[in-house]
Length: 66
Image 1 (tube, rainbow, N blue to C red):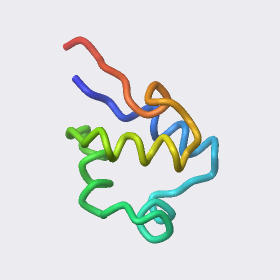
Image 2 (image 1 turned 60 degrees about the vertical axis):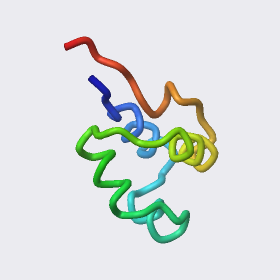
Image 3 (image 1 turned 180 degrees about the vertical axis):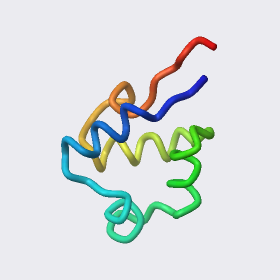
Image 4 (image 1 turned 120 degrees about the horizontal axis):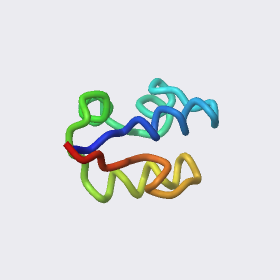
Protein backbone atom coordinates (compact mmCIF):
# COMPACT_ATOMS: atom_id res chain seq x y z
CA UNK A 1 0.00 0.00 0.00
CA UNK A 2 1.19 3.51 -0.80
CA UNK A 3 1.21 6.12 1.94
CA UNK A 4 1.94 9.82 1.58
CA UNK A 5 2.28 10.34 5.33
CA UNK A 6 5.94 11.36 4.89
CA UNK A 7 4.78 14.10 2.50
CA UNK A 8 2.55 15.71 5.10
CA UNK A 9 5.36 15.60 7.69
CA UNK A 10 7.84 17.10 5.21
CA UNK A 11 5.41 19.83 4.23
CA UNK A 12 4.82 20.72 7.88
CA UNK A 13 8.56 20.81 8.61
CA UNK A 14 9.19 23.09 5.61
CA UNK A 15 6.15 25.30 6.17
CA UNK A 16 4.50 24.41 2.84
CA UNK A 17 0.70 24.17 2.77
CA UNK A 18 -1.71 22.55 0.33
CA UNK A 19 -2.74 26.09 -0.62
CA UNK A 20 0.87 26.84 -1.59
CA UNK A 21 1.08 23.73 -3.74
CA UNK A 22 -2.14 24.56 -5.59
CA UNK A 23 -2.06 28.33 -5.96
CA UNK A 24 1.65 29.14 -5.95
CA UNK A 25 3.30 26.02 -7.38
CA UNK A 26 0.69 24.99 -9.97
CA UNK A 27 -0.41 21.59 -8.66
CA UNK A 28 -4.01 20.70 -9.43
CA UNK A 29 -6.58 20.27 -6.68
CA UNK A 30 -7.21 16.81 -8.16
CA UNK A 31 -3.58 15.84 -7.51
CA UNK A 32 -3.78 17.02 -3.91
CA UNK A 33 -7.00 15.01 -3.47
CA UNK A 34 -5.23 11.92 -4.81
CA UNK A 35 -2.42 12.46 -2.33
CA UNK A 36 -4.88 12.81 0.56
CA UNK A 37 -6.55 9.55 -0.48
CA UNK A 38 -3.23 7.69 -0.97
CA UNK A 39 -3.97 7.21 -4.68
CA UNK A 40 -1.24 6.89 -7.28
CA UNK A 41 0.52 9.88 -8.80
CA UNK A 42 2.81 10.17 -11.80
CA UNK A 43 6.58 10.17 -11.60
CA UNK A 44 6.46 13.70 -12.98
CA UNK A 45 4.34 14.79 -10.02
CA UNK A 46 6.71 13.06 -7.62
CA UNK A 47 9.66 14.85 -9.23
CA UNK A 48 7.90 18.23 -9.01
CA UNK A 49 7.10 17.65 -5.33
CA UNK A 50 10.74 16.77 -4.66
CA UNK A 51 11.90 19.98 -6.36
CA UNK A 52 9.38 22.19 -4.56
CA UNK A 53 10.13 20.67 -1.16
CA UNK A 54 13.86 20.21 -1.84
CA UNK A 55 13.75 16.60 -0.70
CA UNK A 56 13.97 13.01 -1.94
CA UNK A 57 11.13 10.60 -2.81
CA UNK A 58 11.62 8.92 0.59
CA UNK A 59 10.47 12.19 2.17
CA UNK A 60 7.21 12.00 0.19
CA UNK A 61 6.13 8.38 -0.16
CA UNK A 62 6.43 5.10 1.68
CA UNK A 63 5.27 1.59 0.95
CA UNK A 64 3.44 -0.34 3.66
CA UNK A 65 2.94 -4.11 3.52
CA UNK A 66 -0.71 -4.98 3.80
